[in-house]
Length: 90
Image (cartoon, rainbow, N blue to C red; front, side):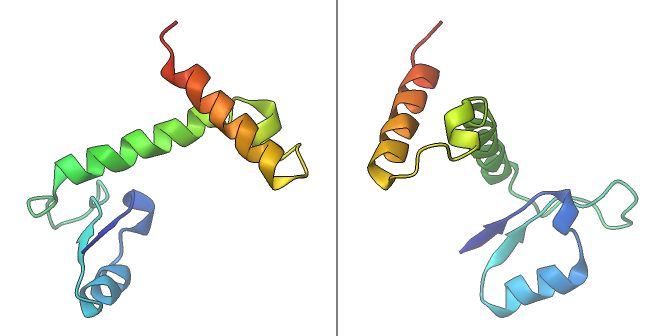
């Protein structure tokens, strides 16, 4: 239903493609844009930001960022361990 992206994808061509597929774009306009941000759903955009921050925190774990583990099971185990460490309060 929605396509959520950051300011880097702010162009009318992308917005028109999203609308052609019967979705609504949640893309904030750049600062120099003449059209305002009146039609954007900021709540959805904040959720995108939270997900992006979660990936940034996961990249702090070297074994995950470099894909050190070769086997899928070991990589998923390290990913679960890193998520648990992030989730636990310090």
